[in-house]
Image (cartoon, rainbow, N blue to C red; front, side, top):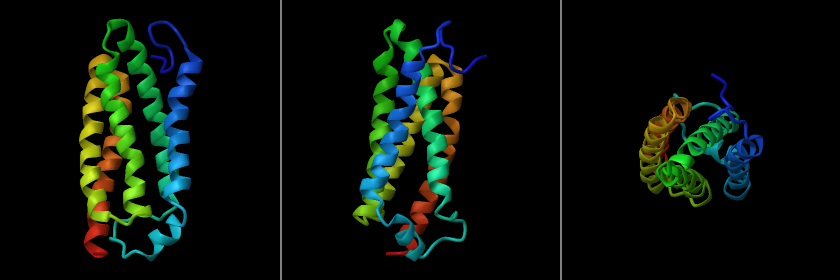
Length: 165
């Protein structure tokens, strides 16, 4: 199965846009909400399982790319079936929550609020993955690493909140 071919077509422009929105959006949020993040992250009391700061942009870039491919596949299959909103509503909600988290945790220092928001984010990612899977198995599977990472990040957020009250 070829990842970028959907319904016998390769819509490279739509695929590129689907990938660029989360990647560029994540980078933009990073520049707006996360100035001095690495220094701030290094100053926080960290749980023993916290990865080094450089890991986050690498992982997030990969996840955003996978998310974009999943979105492209699900949307391309759902649209002719009249189910586009069914898959796009949870996708757009989770992407907005994803971008909001950095402001809550880093820019505004609201780690407890960020924890609650991340729990909601995880729920919307699972909902998105479920809706994608109903439309296209591969699109749903492409969301699994994102679910796993955010579940890990939720535990990390909780630990940071507890250690730095």
